[in-house]
Image 1 (cartoon, one colour):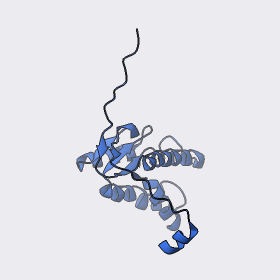
Image 2 (tube, helix red, strand yellow; image 1 turned 180 degrees about the horizontal axis):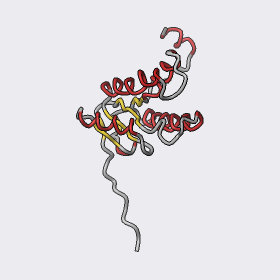
Image 3 (tube, helix red, strand yellow; image 1 turned 180 degrees about the vertical axis):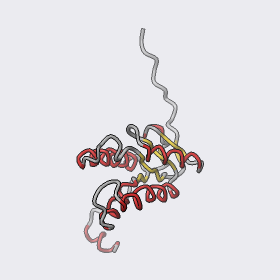
Image 4 (cartoon, rainbow, N blue to C red; image 1 turned 135 degrees about the horizontal axis):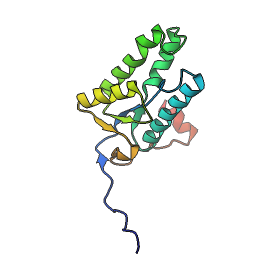
Length: 153
């Protein structure tokens, strides 16, 4: 007996690229170990890269908050600068996003982003495969001639 053929239905599309907040664990389960924190951030950045390559603009709160924490003199996760900046940045960013992609394991902060997104009527996805692809060709036209690059400035 052969397997049923795969669906040939077209994948859903979005009328434009979406701005998607990638939300996942950052501190959860790390004991604030720098290597484990970096691994969690990397997982979110890799998911954002996949969405970018699919035609969307994906963002992480970590990409915006961590440099601010450094500038504010934050010394460690959970300190006063962290509490002032980390989740508020994600909340402000969420207000500008079209959707949330929830990845990874347990995370009170990521779950809070999901609750806030749903309350605001935003789409929440648990897999990048669920996110509709933008319509049309979104690839930039490469400029390979150095004279064209100079002229574009």
